[in-house]
Image 1 (cartoon, rainbow, N blue to C red):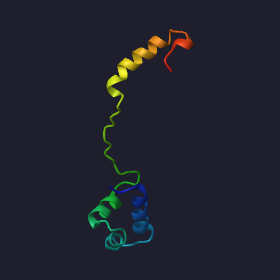
Image 2: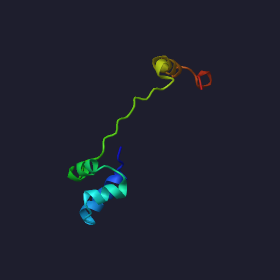
Image 3: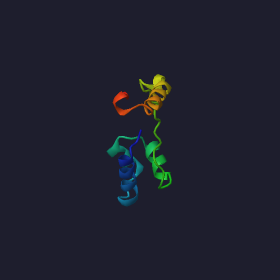
Image 4: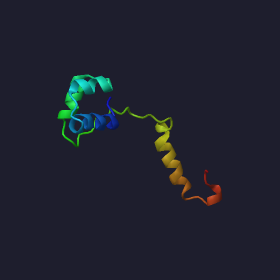
Length: 82
């Protein structure tokens, strides 16, 4: 996946430094097709990252913990769970 930093470098080399796609590919190690795709993309486009669903060890107990905390909110401070 291409980072925003690399995208900035590619755009700079192409638009400001007037380097060809082939020269940019040599310098960055990316394919010409990738460079062409990002040069043609609109200015505000950012690379999309696929994020994995996070799994928390406490997720199965979330409802139980919420109920316990609600019950504790009615107790005196010295009797609450800490």
